[in-house]
Amino acid sequence: MSQAFAEPSIPVSETTIESVLLDADLFVKYSSPEKAFALLRGAIERSPRSIGLREKMRDICVKQKNLNEAAKQCLALVSLYIAREDFDVAYDRLQEAKLLDPRISVAPGLEAIRRARRPDFATNRDRTPQKVRTDVTFAGNLAYVTIFDAVQVIESAKMTGLLVIKSDMHLANVAFNEGKIVDAECNGHNGVPAFREIIEINGGTFEFSTSDNEFPVIINVSSNTNFLLDVLTELDNERAEKQGLRNVGGEMM
Image 1: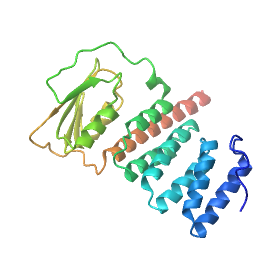
Image 2: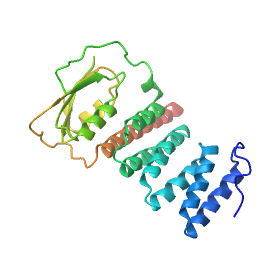
Image 3: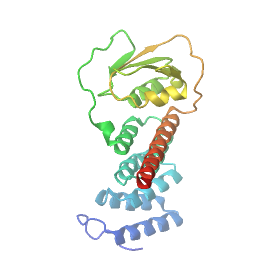
Image 4: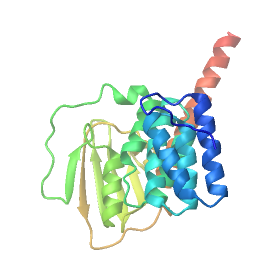
């Protein structure tokens, strides 16, 4: 086995990282996963931004059923992949973290990915104090609490009710049955097309009120997180296609 840790204060080099990964594989092969874990943990402490080390730690932890640590590594990897603008893998790791540990809130990760993919989304947001009702289950200002956060709260509490969103340009709502998104309305549209508009709203207020009765299921989702990721990915792909067409059109002129 190679000696990967001569001096704790020295950052791990690329060569040393390769050696650590090889040693970790050998430890696992010879039924010593705890040694692989300790080896990788030390290397990660010295090189916390190494995707290779964290991916190996994640893989070993999943195989050894150490799901909490695997989820922790997934969340760390989300930030690293965002920094590399590898947003699809960031989405995958965020979704995996939620599957490994359902207690995890994916809202901050979704917001971080969205801000990175669309820098304009993070600027020019209306931070003017706005009045919100207090006779509802919960309410907030979208300049501070995102739609992702609100959906996460409703899903975690498995609440049935209506999330009403108000802004200068929109009056919209999203219906939930036991925490699952089942319908949406926005500017005369409903269902998925309406939700596609709602997810773009980044200013205004929201109010959620519970209901004793369930709503008709127009949007059938197995997971709010998967649905959000799918909608965001579709919107981003459509923007990329439009940008590509504009670029082609400009070159042809």
